[in-house]
Every structure is written in structure tokens, then in C-alpha cells.
Length: 380
Image 1: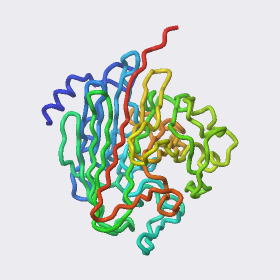
Image 2 (image 1 turned 180 degrees about the vertical axis):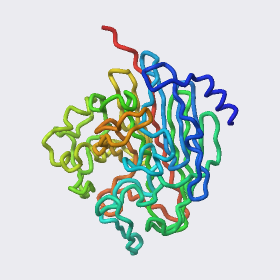
Image 3 (image 1 turned 90 degrees about the vertical axis):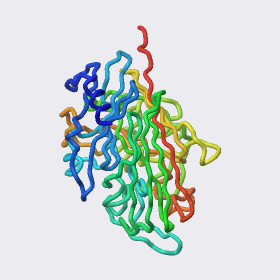
Image 4 (image 1 turned 45 degrees about the horizontal axis):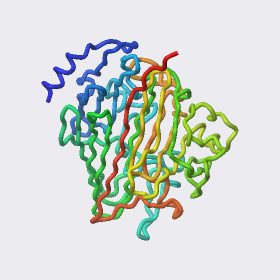
């Protein structure tokens, strides 16, 4: 495997982060370390169109290169070029990571399951966010299989970890397919009833990291309804139609068109940080969720999944104090996340079914796919 990767690395001319055709790989040695006695490494996957670098620390996608309609490559996810920046991070915690065991927010850091109340750590005001203080993003996942286009990882969340019940056994795989899909698969079992709701948290910018805001990129979401939130950014258990609101992405339009509208929901979140209810007849069906498009480069990303909801977060808390892989600041709204999942805080609202509960004898499965393409440059 190392020989294959080294040959591939040599074939790619390592250049600066300027707008060139070549891909710049992060040196693998930048991620060679141990965390809690477990080995951390950096792995490179490729399919001839996409080139991805992944670390098993938090299952993070560190880099993702794709061409534009001039055949020039850019790294379209935000991240850091050294493991130390992830381990000692004062900025955005979840760059490129898998989040769980229960993605998104749990109100008042507590829930009741089978008559037992569980108290969780508060890491988002009065709430629990993305699993708590440890969470999937701080696990060193065991790499069980890897080749040029696939990596499979495994971890176990211990009973009582971050306050959750049950030993939760999880397998996750990332795969780049021949038709330019980035497929993410999750599978999990438990020995005690628990919450199980994983999601992927790459921050995408189809222009490339450090090349400006995402506000002029166009978004379309397959949704007529959203879950409304309170001033703590937690769903209040109600649904709201998106028609005639700043949350209507049924037809594609620029993200920045309505983000500054005088709307209570937008003010609460300082932009978009909400969960859309995906239109589907069967809650378990695999459907198209969203399409993101950058008119300048022609890059397009579709999101498909078998989940009932998708969180769209517009990078409202980036402040420019941290620098990304190219040495440029990670500024306000220069990356966005599209996270497929169960509804946030569903465990505390009967109206937000299905519940993210996994019981002994059951198996949790999730499929999330990001499909990439390049539209031809329009002729003037």
C-alpha cells in the first residue's frame, strides 16, 4: 500500500496552493503520531478525478481535490495540514470529522430512555453538541482495511462515555467510486438501548479553501419543511413550511440571497444552522437531498442519503483567527456543511420522529453520498 501511494504521490507534482492543474498532497509524516496509545496516520485515496486525504483521528477528511471546468484543481474542503492543529485546536472543532454518537444538539444536555434519565456534558451552552466532550471526532478509529479508493474504520463507544448508555460498536467506510461519488457508510450495534445518529461534517467550498465566501454559490434543497429552533439553536418540536421564507431552497439560488433577511430564525443562528425535512414517501428511502453549485468554476456537488433530515450550516462562527492548509485565514462563511441525519433533539420531542434509538439485536445503517461533477464553461 505504501508503495502504491508513494508512486501516486510522485506522479503528482507538488506545487503551492496557487491556482494550478496539479494536486498538492499533504505529507503523510505530518500526521504520524499517537493519541491515547493509538496510532494516527494520514491516508490518500483517489479515483483519477477526486483525490482525498483522510486521517483516522476522528475519521477526518483533511483534503479533497477536484478539477474545475478549466481542468484546474482546488482543495474544496477546509482543514489543517498538521495533526497538531486538530489536537490543539482553538477554532472550529469538527472540520472534516464524523460526528456522533448522536449528531447535532440535545437540549439541556439530557434525555430519558426506557424510564431512565441520562445527563450528558454541556459543550454548547446548556446543550450537548455532536456527542459531547469526546465524541466520534476525538476517537482514534482503527483502520481495518484500506486501498487506493476505500478506507474502512472501526471504533467502540464505551458504556457511559459522554454519559450515553451502551457499548456502541461502529464501522464506517469512505469510498471514492469510478463515477466520482464519495460514499460514506455507517453500521452499528449496541448491547444496551442508546442513541445512535452519525453524520459527516466536512466544510465545503467549491471555489477552494481560502478563496472567498460561499455566499455566491447556489444551493437547492429537496425540502418543503424545516424544524424550527429556539434562541439556543435547538428545535422546539415544530415544523414550518419554507415557502415565502429565507429557507426556501426548493429552486436553486445563491446562498447569500436571503441570509441577511430580517428573520427571527436567521437571527437566532446568525445565519443558516437549521435542519431541513427531506421530501420522501418512505422515511428509509434513498433520495436526493441537495445540490450545491459554484458558477465560477462549474463544480457541482449533489447530496444523496437515506436519512430524514439534513442540517445546512453556513459557517457562521468562523472568525479568521485560524489558518487553513494554504496559510489563509478561515474566514466568516467561507465553508458550509451539509449533514444528513435524524432530526436534532428528536429524543426529546415525540413530534420529531423517527427517534434515533438503537436497541440490542438491531443494526443501525446509514448511507450518505456526495456526488461530484463539473459543468462545462458557458459560452459567451
